[in-house]
Image (cartoon, rainbow, N blue to C red; front, side, top):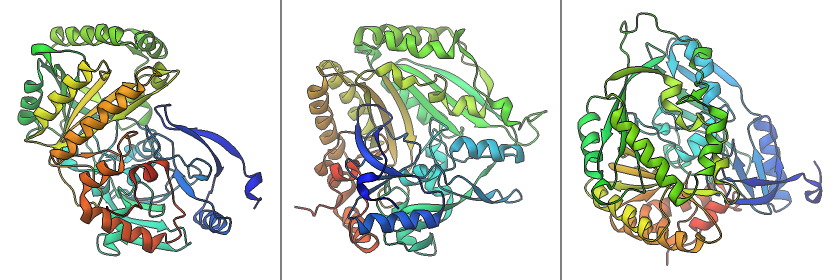
Length: 472
């Protein structure tokens, strides 16, 4: 291996463009190569961040001045049993590779985020959720077993029965305990390549919560778009969608061919490649107010009846517009997603909308989802709701945006809420400790000391959270 000064370097960024830094990098293609690179890092006193597809919006896969391990080259399916739907997968396999490989046999990933491009190790490290979290739980609920390579070179197999403390901490531990080298997954049997979808017109934030109350009992998926620029009686208005899998025999000609799942070439008659440019041209407060008003008006005239939609088209809305993040250039954007218990969520989310509008930093996109609690140590989920928000970042709004979101974070913590590390770029150590509590953070720190005593693993997110700092 080369001397540290001769390692290749590049600029890495978060998916929101706003966060970026320069690091050396390595591209291990096997568990043995990964362990060798960890040994190299220890010998040269270098810190390491794990990185997959780079789809975290903030600084979760950045490590300024250190090493970044890009694991996308470890992307093999190691074993597959179509009788049970259990697969052993390497960490660099993506969600897209997963569904394209197994849909032919009638299986679908049980949980997916809004894009198909993250790696499975990234999904595990962030314990990602989808539009069905209220029913299916997070990604980790469908992981049966993992192999974790620690910075010391040991490979630990962990499951709910073997090393369960490591299993429940590494999943959702944002890459700070080791590197996943194998994941054993339980996929979901489906009886069609389509789902039954229903569109719902929602006139206020109160109606948003009523929608979830009514439809989560009878649907497999529920999600709602929120117009975050509307005020007054229309505060929180939007358009919601519920969806359910088709039962066995319900689809007379179930189509499992992956090529038939491709996204449409146009959106409302506009070529997909042009949509991002149009959105970019409207990426001002006034422009987005106009766009959101038009979208909401369209939802009032479209029928609310049932229709069928492909699994890919329903689940991966973020992939409809190629390189949609370019609409936020040149300074990028951040996402912010608080999770708030169900009784407090209506008031907290209303206050977020009011405060961000009053400060002149409204979110350009808002998405509501319902969640259930789970048993992972640093889980972001609570028995309640989340509100995913997109904020453009400019030189003129950055200071007030950060100030506002720190105030919002205080509000979230005071109401028993948490945050989503995969999207975060702003929360401070005090918010991290308040949100997860001393017992959970101390347990995680103890595992860090045991598995990575030399503190080889480092990310800018973990440093910003103060993961290794003691409680005051």
